[in-house]
Image (cartoon, rainbow, N blue to C red; front, side):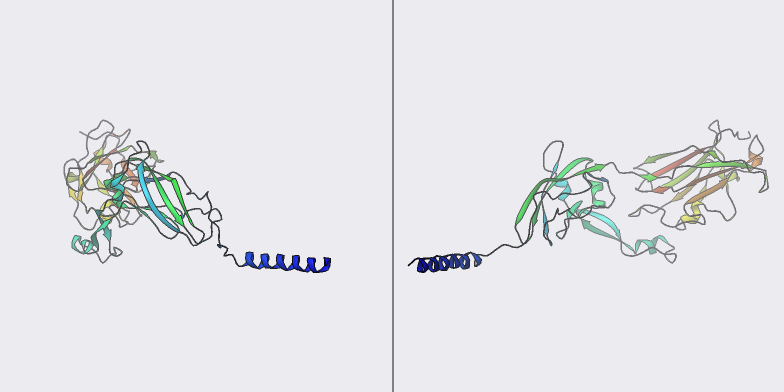
Length: 317
C-alpha cells in the first residue's frame, strides 16, 4: 500500500511538471534604465546634430523607439515648433570645380521640407536638422517609448536638448600679421596678433567686405592699390569664383551665395587662408604689412564686414 502511494505521488508531481513546462515563457529582457548619452544634447540653430543611439542597458534588441512628446523644459509647455515642417535648402550633389557659376551651383541646391526634430525608429537616434533655425533657442526635453519582444517602456524626460543661438559666421583663432622690406620678400618680422572684428547685418544684401585700418582707424584704399594679394598665396577671390572682386576707396567687396552649409565652400591655394599685403610705400614705417587670417565663413544670408586693424602701423597721409 505504501509503495502504491509513493508511485501515485511521483505521477502527480510529473503531471504538474508537464503542465508548468507547457506555460509560454516570454523571451528577452527590457530594462527600466535605458538612457541617452550625452545628456543634454547640445545643438546650434540651423546645424545638423545627431545623437548616439539609445543606450539599452542590456535590453534585448532590436528595439523600436517612438517619440511621445517634446516640451520646453523650463516652462513644461509643449514645443510644437520642434515638430513643425519647415522648408530648408539641401545639396543634391557635391559642388565641384566644374560648378563655376551661380547658375550651376544653384542646380545642385533644392528646397525640401524638414522637421527640426526626429527620432530614428530603429535605435532611437535623435536628429536635429537645419530646420532648427526656425525654432526658438532654449532648453527642451523629450519623452520616448521603447518596444521590443519583451514589452514596452515609456521613458519620461529621456533626453534634454539645449538649443543655442545660431552662429552667423566663423573665423579661426589666431589671425596675425608680419612686416617685411618694401618691394621685396625679405626682412620678415615675427608674427604679431591681428585684431579682426566682424559685423553682421541680417537685412543687408549678400555681401562680404574686407576693411583694412591702420592703428589710428584710418582705412587703406584698395582701389588705389593700397591693399593687394600676395602672389600665388590664398585669398578670398580664389574661394569665390562666382562674383568679381570690387575695390572701393575703403574696402574689398564680394557678393556671395547663401548656401546650406555656409560660404565659401571652395578652398584657395592655402586652404581657407587669406593672405594680403599693404605695400610699404603706403605706410609711415616704410614696411610692407602682411595680414593673414583663416577660416572665415558666412553662415547666413546678409552683409558682413571684416575689419582688420593693423597695430603699430600708420598710413601715410
